[in-house]
Length: 347
Image (cartoon, rainbow, N blue to C red; front, side):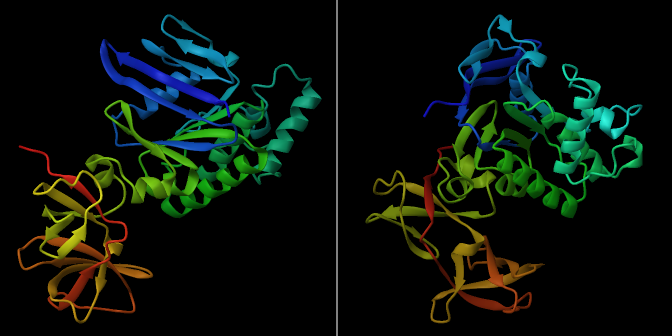
């Protein structure tokens, strides 16, 4: 199956300083993808390059086999058939909601433009607010209008630049799911840029984690969580701690016992084993003890910080009906079904 969007070995710079270098990924039609990474990693620059707002110094960007950008030439943003939803909504304050949505539909007659705008308003569940102005809407309503405006020209690809970041936690979660459902129902391809892992996991079919201007790993959310390809990925995605150990007989010997070694496991190698909070389980007959030094109530689970005899600490997610006090000692074991070991880098 051919790619809908292909980003190949692109390089982008500001004032001669590369912020994206050798970055590549591709996506199929109808996919919802996400570029996830810390601030300053280059993810927004990639989005701006796809939109046509930033030139390439190397590489190519193609959409349905049509070249959008390459070094020295770039198709104008309005010719790319790409929609964009910005973090700050970018609505025109002097135009009504209907006029904002219809702003980019100049090829349609006034009546067709209005009909299209009304259809888009219904799509985003705001059918009765067409005559209001942006300042009369809540943040969530303004973001829905921005989405409707971006979808009105029927783009081949929708780009979303941290569109929910200014909303409160509950609203952003609900709106992200609503937007995903709208895009899926209409078969629209989209790329979200965010630094919020929960948002990325809930919104995207595929996620590319960006690290220092490159894709560190591209995959489905569960792959990134359970099969991180690098220590950076293991540390960046989700929660967890690294426990040191030594490879002995094909296993990593640690202070919590021997753990199956998955990875580069040559005999005698110094390793670090990633242990997620759900890998730590209570086991009454276990010889391994840990002291509760902190706990955070998280609804169905309590997230405990546990101190081992060596002084090193773990995190454990334990059902909240099993309530333990700070200072209490627990008998614990490791569920090694998804443990991953990384060779300790030399100093």
